[in-house]
Length: 308
Image (cartoon, rainbow, N blue to C red):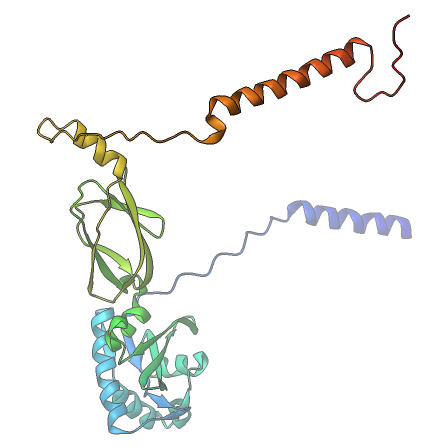
């Protein structure tokens, strides 16, 4: 009876396994949605809300640039503070970049994204460290920074672009050269031939190489600044051998006279040195020939007896 029950249990398990469907692979997390309404949390300094007049001025400028970068409406820091007071949730004024806290703040004002900024400094340069949080997923999307005194980074405008749409954080490289048909490479990637229009490139240091089959390569590093043209004048040096060949085929080129100067030959090229070297070589060949004729190998040893 026990054996029959065990067999029945095995059959039930096998039947359940046969009818089970394989699990589908886990779906990839959806990409972050485009901001439709951004809430700007009050700026903080050293982990606390900054209520100074300078901070409020930076906050207003940041709100304006974020709205331009995202092409959407911004809930300002002052409006966020009013909503927090009405909801009687003062803890939301000290999120300090925490995604969970910023998510609750975004839900409070019905925003799709929240931006948190902390004001700091690097020497004489004032910097705002920015965090973008998506309310729907409750996760951090991106970080960026805005350096106000660094022109090539674009200040607050550049920081807003880097946070909202980093693909647009670019400048333009303008290469000019009198040589037509020179190939232009940036970071090893071909971008065109001269004459070339301005080329948009990511901000930062880039390796530039301009090459032409009749000229020496031009290689240098260039710094691309945000939303600016970086002009580079390329002077290519023509190969000397090609200059001579092109000059010789030009019918109008003047004929150059070549002057030959008699230079005494080196001592090892004189007739007596060559004759001496030849005599030494001939003597060596005779010695080798006699030795091999007597049957003595080069690496063998023995006694050579005169013939009887």
